Length: 152
Image (cartoon, rainbow, N blue to C red):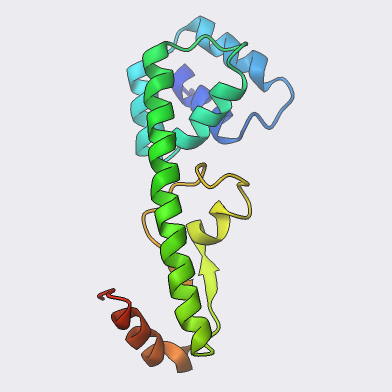
């Protein structure tokens, strides 16, 4: 499979440079030529802009990235932090309401991962909060969410 330099660099960023040679590989890809607008577009469309920002910032001494790319990725990362902080506050409000009614909840996907697996609230993109409740509690859960001004 022939991947573009942009795709290969994006994979390095997304995997946080899992291999010890990743920073040098990233520098080599960059020196071979990166279509930075394509790279940015792919980073955003794949939901990887925060991870890309973190990786390139961590290895900025080895990777020569145009300032407009760094600035755009930083803006996307900080926007993601703000959105995730809001979602976290909503999640705490929801969990408190469910806890008051004795309903067990399991967090799924982004909500579960952003604060546990990533270690940085801004690295995982999230569009919503996914929770799982027992079928017997579904009606009560719907009522609680309605009381919290959420709609189906």
